[in-house]
Length: 330
Ligand code: UT7
Image 1 (cartoon, rainbow, N blue to C red):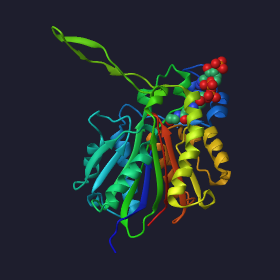
Image 2 (spheres, rainbow, N blue to C red; image 1 turned 180 degrees about the vertical axis):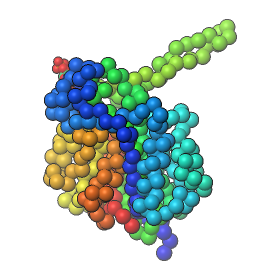
Image 3 (cartoon, protein in one colour; image 1 turned 90 degrees about the vertical axis):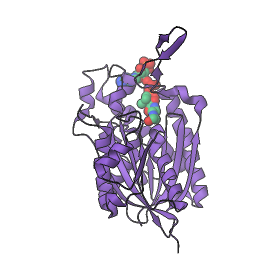
Image 4 (cartoon, rainbow, N blue to C red; image 1 turned 30 degrees about the horizontal axis):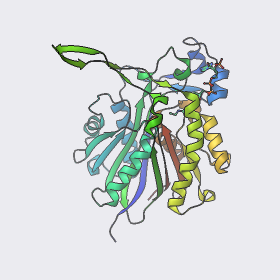
């Protein structure tokens, strides 16, 4: 039988060493451990040093994922790096490819903010299902601490840095059971890391823009409302595509933005608390890294077991949101 199904056979993760707890942030902005904990569930986050990079975090997570899948870097056909904070705007996936010595793999970045991992999972699956590639490495990695305004208490308490990775392989049975993806650019202004243009006259009558990216701005209330409404809807859609009911889900694995969002989505879907994977207390919102980081931890803790059914959902800037229902392991 031809192997045109997809299985997720390995995971890995990496975070910077430096940890910043809520108390430390009170020295920067007017906030409190009590406010951050009750409004978000976050207690600490990891912060990159200037010597850290997205590509080195991504490579560290990838090495673990490749080892746990039982393959070699040279077996990889494709490397997808979901990130919004590349070390180089031309992309960081090729740097990861070089660090891993994955000399056969084609590598490129994919940008879909906090939905990047779910969008990447579906993208990777298409290459496998069409028979083009057999071994794909998908990484979610972000260093949002580079782009946070450390004077803005509405955002600086939320984010952290990290990377997570999975290996997807061609398989006889298809373990990506269903998915649904959405975008709504009309709501783009609610969450941005925008480029600020400043016009310079290059030659008489010819202007160029030479600006820089500006720190993250977010309308938290709107994004919260969006997430709590749209995430249950998209999970329902993906479940419908998978021909599964919500009771058949073993784990709800959401983008780790806010514990209140995790709780509200679980409640709307009628999923009991013990099926909800949460590690944001330790890492904050790590954007594209949050789902694979939480996935890898749960696998290593022995919570997620082979054949468990996972409903994963990412949501964020774009605005973008998506869900993927998959069964863990070969
Ligand atoms: O990864 C992309 C997806 N992102 C998200 O999903 C984020 C979604 N949004 C959220 O998680 C929440 O909206 C936040 C955690 C960002 C904010 O929580 P909130 O309950 O919506 O608070 P709020 O923005 O309504 O602010 C309530 C109050 C305000 O004071 P006033 O105007 O009521 O006097 C804020 O100024 O809390 C104040 N506040 C803070 N106080 C202490 C805002 N940030 C802080 C802070 N410390 N860090």
